[in-house]
Length: 144
Image 1 (cartoon, rainbow, N blue to C red):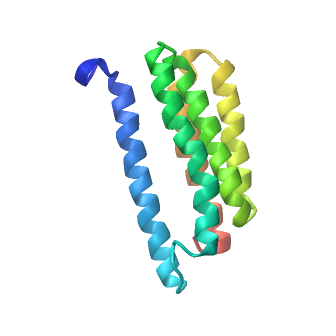
Image 2: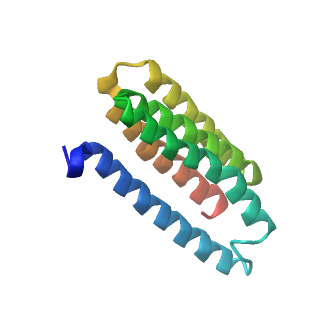
């Protein structure tokens, strides 16, 4: 257990999520500047309005699931909601992005019904493997 009864893994994943969000905002800002546009352009606002709500729902559900001792449902919940955000936000992007979101959702569905001990491995497959695999494809075919 970590600070005030928070499981160490939950604190670790929370820090990882904050770091990922920071990296995402920085890279989106840099890409927008290179393209001579703003992150808050019409396309940027559409992306944020479709991507952020599933992530906020994930944060709220995390608190509820932890409060009720249902931590085993977190990997599936996180993967499903992140995938939902990627599908909806990726609707304004290259075809590979919403496809990646659907893959996250598939891994999330598996995580909900798989043994709880598979949770970390499925999150690594999703948040690590899918990001790296699709990131390489997108970088190669679309320049990042």
